[in-house]
Length: 523
Image (cartoon, rainbow, N blue to C red; front, side, top):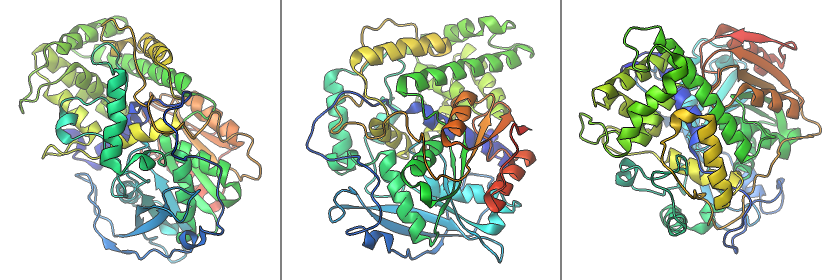
């Protein structure tokens, strides 16, 4: 794909992957499903039964991470970390966490910088290698080992979450109730969903122990295994939730946290999803305004009518997909996903406009490529488990909705983001997590009123379509930390290659020097 040939463009593709992961998952939260499987609980400090996990010394060996085209190779080493599947039963079943480390290039390293790319289902191992390549001249990689890990259930960690076959994914297997009105879940289908996820992932017990609080505990075991007294961490998108929850559970173990593209810790599932929809519509309208300055814009010359123009082009795909060169066709949901994907980095807006223009001729190749990039579809037709893991993890993190609540959410979503509205009537939408084996374990609000936490740094882009700037302001306030406001039009800023952002983050991570109140950068 042409937009992934140069490193700067790779950042755009990375940004869209991070952002869409934040928006694509299932909601979770209030009604209980089956009982009999323990989950959640409070932070468990190292002690009887956990000593063998906290005492691990991972055997790192050289490895060659697979990197996107255009990203230079880095020297890396890999290991695996054992953790209890259920921290309340440390003598029981175990999980293994895949870990990748890019050693510091300098002679005086401070320690490890643990990274998380978001999702929540995206692997951190590849992300650490990409970050090392992108930060090639940064003092950060002189002073820190960059460490990425695939959270439990994700990527190369085991057991791995798996809900659908590749063929089912190609046929549009549902990962969310949105958009309602096309192929809505029934109660029987949500029962089948949890059964097949359990069957393919290692059992109901696995589904009960993949929430953010479980991963935060794993990250503390990793911190100790790396030999760090305190955690230095940088997380993007969902990674800001993970970092904030770690701070809540282990405040005395925090050295520094950089939180980029923040989840709002005060916003419950309904509120946050509507915030995201509002941000997406605003981004769509900015794309349309950019398009309107060009000749032959497929959305017309009046940005105020761009939503209607887009709906006119994509709604017919519900009944008749656009043709594609590989014969798969482009469906309505895939077209909207493709356009939405390109919103997450301004560098990809022209690609989306080209794809929308193709629809006028009945072609869908460009938007399908954007969709496939978001899903991580490989040339052989295989898919990673990133979005299935996102759905499953969110079943433990998000508030679980009744059909009435999920229907209300869909209606609010379409009102806030009408460019995504298929225009089909629907009576009832169902939460895909409604029959999950345990109640959600995160809780809202989270990471508030933390005692003894050092200063943190939240980085927030003003035009972020998936994690609106207001969420960054709220996270910084909740943690009592510093805020770096970044003027721009994309999701997150850590990999944007911006000198102002890079300098502020490096000063904080290396010297623990926070930016001044009101500090701003511009992309």
